[in-house]
Each structure stands twice: as structure tokens, then as C-alpha cells.
Image (tube, rainbow, N blue to C red; front, side, top):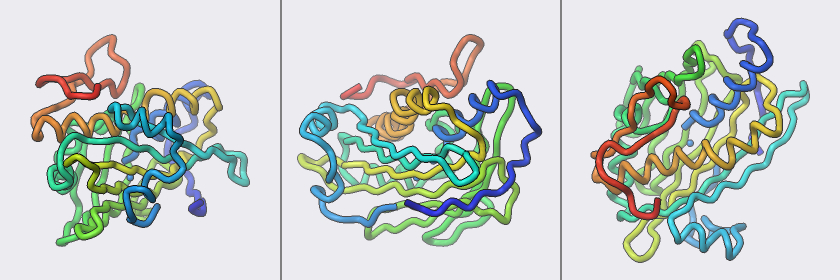
Length: 245
């Protein structure tokens, strides 16, 4: 379990109901630590039923919620999915990180501040009810291990307390890709258990499903921009359907 180092969010005080809404939104919207390994290692801990769901095209999510010393609820989440494209296709989508705002739920803008061959420093802006939230993360790309990890740059202005995580990709027969996503998020706000459960059952899978849609459409799928009456972050296909959904 990663250590929690909290900073004070720069959001103005808000009503408790809105705090919960923003906390839930931040947790879901943050994009992704575990060492790379074999296919069996990546799916270790999954039950036979969960493996069946995974192979049927579902996203499997497992969380470990806990409360920090000051009473803030945080969580570590692991999510798994199978993309019906070879590993190289998924990796190409990850390398095109500047375009994540086109398909990732709630992600409104990605601004690249610095870039080397294997690293990027980006400021991400999330759409939340009645507002937006921003934070800067340092991304590390490991092409040999097919991993992308991130951590919060606390030297930059940020509206959350902490986040670290990893996207990991492994070949999965026949000619598919297993996605293993691990993230830890501390929003700096208290998240009720009911909202946390909603995250697990609904919002978090959309992150992996959005990557799946984007990859299986050969980079063509985009989320719809929200319109009046839509729930924040809802992603709908503009170009075709995705198998397994």
C-alpha cells in the first residue's frame, strides 16, 4: 500500500454534498504499482467467475478502501480488462497521450509541460459538477515492460492530495491484450462508502472501457461532449460499436 502524503487542496470550502460529488469524480477521473510479470501473475487473485467475466469482455475491479490517520477515506483499486487487439495496438494508443482527452471520461484537457523519450509531465483538467479540477503528474513510459506509471507532482498547483498508479499491458491469447490498471488516490476529501461503491460498480470501469473502445476502433472512437441532461463524464460512441460491450 503506497504511503499517503497529503497536501491541502486549494479548493474553497464547499457544502458536504458537493464535496462528496467532487471526491467521487476526482477518484474516477484520475488516470494509472505492481511489477510486470507473467499472464498468470497479472490475474493472480481473480476468481474463476471473475476470469470468466474478464474473458467475456467485462471489466473486473477490486478495491481496498481504508481511512487515513486524519479520517480521510482513500482507496487502492485494481482493474482488469481484455482488449481484442494485439499489445502493439494498445501501446500505440498509450503513447499518443496528448489525445487522451478525446476519449477518457471526465478528462477535459491534457497540457504537456515537458517531454523526453520515456517521460512526460502533463497537467490534466477534469470536468466536475459546476467546476473543474487540475493537477500535474509525471508519467514514465517503459516500452520493454509495456508499463506507464504516474505520480503527482506536488511542486505544481493541485486540487487533490495525492495519486500514484500504473497501466500495465500483457499479451493475452489469442492475439489480445490484458490490461492491468492499479491506482491509489487520496482526494483530500471524505468519501462516503455508498459513493465509493458507486465508483467501483460504475465509473471506474468506464476508464478501461474507453481505452478498449479507442483501441478496437483503431483510434477512431471518441466520447461525446456532455450536453444538458447527461451525467458528467458519460462516454458514448460516435463511431461504431465495440465488441464485448
